[in-house]
Amino acid sequence: MGQRWHVEVDRSVCIGSGLCAGAAPAGFALDEARQSHPVAAETDADESVLAAAESCPVEAITLTLAGTGQPVFPPEE
Image (tube, rainbow, N blue to C red; front, side, top):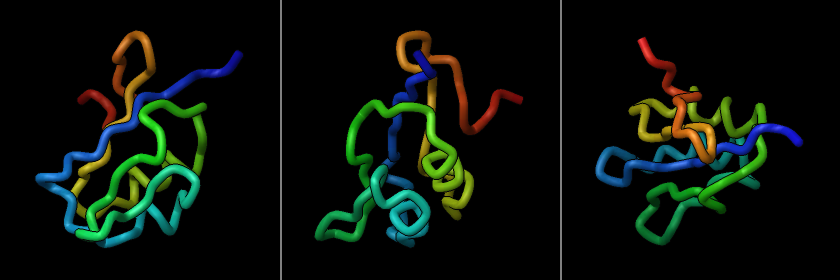
């Protein structure tokens, strides 16, 4: 079984650029206020979801390993 990620969007930081929904339409959606939210709180590890997090201009997306909380993105420094 592969890794599972917990996906969060900090809506107080999100500017509604839509880059995440464009990069991973199965992983993110914009609501009527044009703010992003994950389609599901947990997902299988997926390159498109990681690309979406990396493309967020305000770094509003956080990915952690489900169960352990270990950071996936942004990486620990």
